[in-house]
Length: 298
Image (cartoon, rainbow, N blue to C red):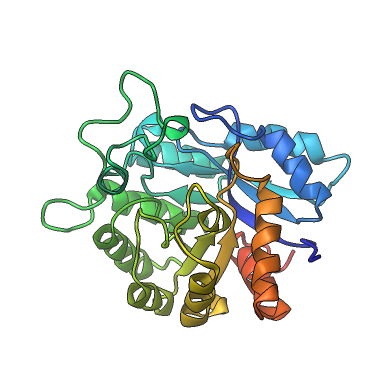
């Protein structure tokens, strides 16, 4: 059985949240640290995770002092949408990832039928104002990146953080990446390109990888509820975009999936059984993450 020693996960959801989660940030940090992982990023669709991460760090600092826990912010209704002010505050407090809109993206609604839902009860918000109106787009009617989105990207570049593309459309991704590369961004992650939002084709992934982006394939998307890609399809995609431009995350935290670290383990074990060498697994589960988190010299 493969070990997870030194691996990272840039995409984990935790309680408290409007959706039921498998554990809080402290629980998840302990589980991942005990499994031998080196670090994680806690994500929320609803708020900056700076405070969650602070408490998760406290939970593991005595038992696993070298374990890293990082925060991020997703640009949905809970933080005012594409809100440079909220982004700057999160970055000032150490956030490492900034996601373009996810649940509240117009493209998410087109993929799943509405904003704030994945199309089934356990993953559907019940608030009176489930989603903003209108839903968020990062381009205008002419296909140009909005001024607020440009300001967000400029902040990400200034802080050396990671720009993640969230659930926005292919057209929006291409516009954001074009601007970000021109602004000097070195850390751009294409969020689960295999999922229905954004559901990128392989040639587009290859082009984005050539532009310097990292494709973030998510382990839960090989499991029943979110199934979006086969193991063979994942191997094909890794080969096409190259391991140098691939990361594997769990996108875990849901009660119908295993704990995030075990979700990662099952997928990497399966990849290895299908002939993917350990050198590739280490690259997509450790080395690329260390660059993105600015830990390469740590």
